[in-house]
Length: 515
Image (cartoon, rainbow, N blue to C red):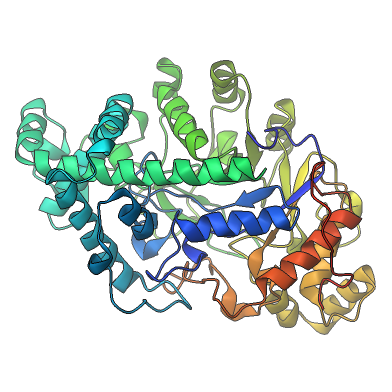
């Protein structure tokens, strides 16, 4: 691994989701552009690349709402790599590139589906025979979750995409005879789905080996909860709080607060922790093992839910009727630590955090998070202000859920802007780089910045607007953006604040990051 799992050294990196990378296929992928991006990071003296979840996207193309906690998103397969493997011909590709300024999922999805179908047909015709041993090894080593996922996906396709609880009752309840019949009737579709998963894993593995060769570690994202309409709930109903019809009795969310008077109703299924404890948290061990095949560090989204989660009765219209219910806490983390020997985990501990959550995080030495955009809404004791940071911390200018720093600053009242200008000793004209400098100068061992802030982009480049169902997750890096120039400036800050890797080659740096 190119960087230690524990944050022992000062380092820095960039947050950029795979789908935001440039390509002619309408969406970023794990092909040549990803390797070129890794090269840019290495040249800029960065050590970490943070991505969003790589599981299949759910409603609204949200990577945090997936129908599988174990599977991979086949939309990030690289057609260029399929050509290299002999599974596609150049004539199979679209003549004209798809738009590059944003991900158009309505066009990307049918294109990638068709290309993967052609690749599968080519493989069955005997093309790329050298892949056969690797495919057989992949299916043998991933039997359990892969068989569940491929059967679920095949059934989803057969029944027009409806939720699994609306499938024929014997199949929804996983009666053995119904499962056996479905496996027999859908064997070809299941094999195709397994092949697609194999391709993603194969290409990601090649990308990760390239990252290792350049000294770049990858930080992934693991949402704590799963979607009710998912293969995980269908295949493992005993692990979730369900009624006799296997519908959720309670769903996840967040309680009312100053920003949301009725709370947040997420609708995710909630775990039956007692049942998971009985088999030593086998599902969680498998999930973390799969995640660590893709990445070097895992950020657990909504980490506080391990200590206690907000349980809302199913059917509630708001989150006001929920209550806090204790989670597995140290018991789960102890089991994972015993199994893996280490916990390469970042705890997403934003929001309402109790002393018990902080104690759980600190007991296992897990780094928490500080977001600078949250640092100026109270007084000088705000824990996100740099003078209150601690070394075992990951500091961000903003996350995928925040506005860009430029857009955020412009939206603030003058009094707040004045306070920020005073703290940063700047006039606010280059606020994105003022925020980056603040993060890089922090005692926090790891500093991460979204690429949109490196490029000094406004709100039009925002990745996600929480609570807004449409139009998210579409931002992309375009060829006309001055990325090399800005990353050169980032290298300068990394050198100034001792965040360069020990073996970073000597390269000229810009004295003015915003130049």
